[in-house]
Length: 166
Image 1 (tube, rainbow, N blue to C red):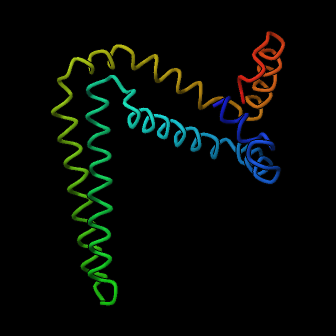
Image 2: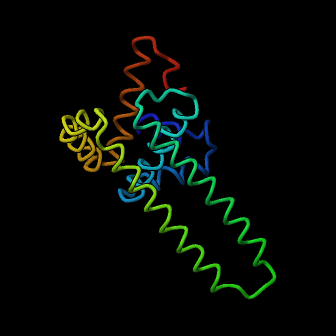
């Protein structure tokens, strides 16, 4: 998050107006934590698409996630086309509710099937540490993080890492 804060508040990287907007947004703890979650998900998805995820369980979960998104978009487009000029709001709502239930149930079943995988024992072992670390993230003050990012950048430049953030 330090890197993201630094890049998105750099007026040379995102423009002056955007940098000011991001700085204001990052100072709101609620917005900051939501942005951190989105960035984490984006990083995970990008790593998946580049083939960098090594966990069999994680790959399986992400396979399912991308498949569900694809099916959902396809069905949504089909429903949209078929109801575009008709008064079929009730059908659209019912289909959407049915699909949502289907996807949730499919995902739940998938989790139950994979729960026996050996990676889950590793997760159970490390989950307290992961949750503790995530708790620390939730306690972080975005303004203090920006100040820390500035200090870290100056320190890196002093030891010769001039392009670490750029």
